[in-house]
Image (cartoon, rainbow, N blue to C red):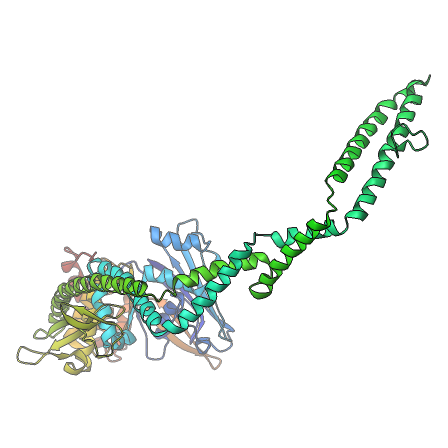
Length: 592
């Protein structure tokens, strides 16, 4: 869970620390005090888009730091480890996000600088933020389908994953087949050019590194006379101009004479030098033998030089046309063979591709039908659960319907697929269109929720959906940002009751203006604003019980200074506490 969050230099908040309860924490405050900065900070900590305009004037940068406790599940530990981060000694994990006044952003996790996307990946496992923007987004058809899929979980996720894999392959084959058919003449010309090049290279049969080896051979063959003269002179200097010639004994002969003279000397100091001369004689003998072997192997054959030059000329013709060197020519040939494998426009190749396309289409149609069935089953359950939530939100006669319909394909649709003999559009998320409908009462028609509900009713419908989805969430911390806007009276009490019930299985953080909701919280934080020296600052305070009474009285139409307001606030707190105790015996289990 998110145990603590510190916000510095963000909006009107100069420096504030939020210590969050493991159950239900509520954040309240007067309009303009900076409550939204709490949610903005959470968005930043979750890897959301940074805005320089959110940085407090004069602060230079905004910093949001979060301390997560008890989060080291396997999938979270993998993210932290891959980022090079570490947990603190107490097992908690520190995440930090800073945004400069110039708009530049930095992120840290477990003591290491990380890309912002790493915080986003972490937040996907730990946090879910539900706000007014989410409500508006849920009115879009694609988002409604995503809501259903998220609610359904694995029964939809598994076939959807397999559907996407097969669809990608099907589209690839369809595109390749159309490309070959439409560009058959052009591809045939390209294929002829590639085959000609491959035939030309095969005729020469170059070997890797051969051009460099030939260059060395040519140097040696072209300078054979000079090399022979140098090697012969060196051999004569080592071994002597001729064997037994006393006039030119060579280095070996001179060493032999030196050894003879020292070995017969009367002084032991001179005799001790003789073994070292013997070692030098052995070394010179080896050099002389190697020089002789070099001379024996030195080829001065002009015909051989012509052959090597001719071979070099053949290789240069290839390197002028295909690459800078022989290794590049071989790489071009390999690439050409791969390109040729995709340029076969023969009837046999096209028929094979068409058969593969049809095979994949059949498999894809089966997966799409299975996906539709799984969605239809989940839709009935989602509708029932949301309708059940509405009954407790002063909308007892309202009923939610979740429809799953196949999207028909247009005549020219490139993604048309036949499912059950019917042409449908095979999109990236399946063939289904999902829509949330609301029946306000038994005699009313079923209409899209944004058409059937008033402003307050729409907020309650969206909140009911959020509560149901929250039970489907695998994350531990749920954040609700004024999703209760437009709601009041008895419905507000029911919202507070539901959020409190949700807090028995999740950590819940709620930003609200409703005292009926705030009364159900386990911890109450207030964002308050003050002015000093002409500068406005906001901070966050954790309220004690007596302070909660005063804050709830303020929220009750600004009656914080009256006995009546305090009495109403105390009554509200007592009722909420009693309600929580009476319903706490049978906590609702989280969905898997």
